[in-house]
Image (cartoon, rainbow, N blue to C red; front, side):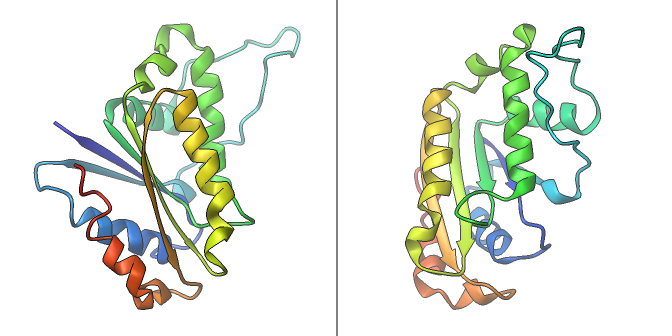
Length: 183
């Protein structure tokens, strides 16, 4: 059974990226489990790279929000990163979440890298300029999927700045209907 984890990375609740994600999710089969997290509202401290700090414990066992995100990530068959394009890349809350993957790689008993292999990573983003503005964001996530031996499901992009602008992007709204067609 497929299980989708939607990670909303916008600092704006109900923004254009979330609108795209929710419209696309409406087209998933009804037997597909969906779990939604808004990363901007979840307390997650900035990632601290401790690999070369003398006397510091390298990796503490994940707790709280970090554990919740870890458990949801490894349980899902499909991970949807829904982040607006900010300065040609993902939002800060999305980047913070992805930074924690580095710690999870190094906690040997988690087997994180092996558990991610075979999952599918999807990207949904809204932007307010020319279409190629999202190229770096999409490439970053595609390469992350490749590194983890995940399948890259594709990217859904839409244009919009003010809330609900994306609803006027007829191409994006047509694409939400078929984005998850392979599921």
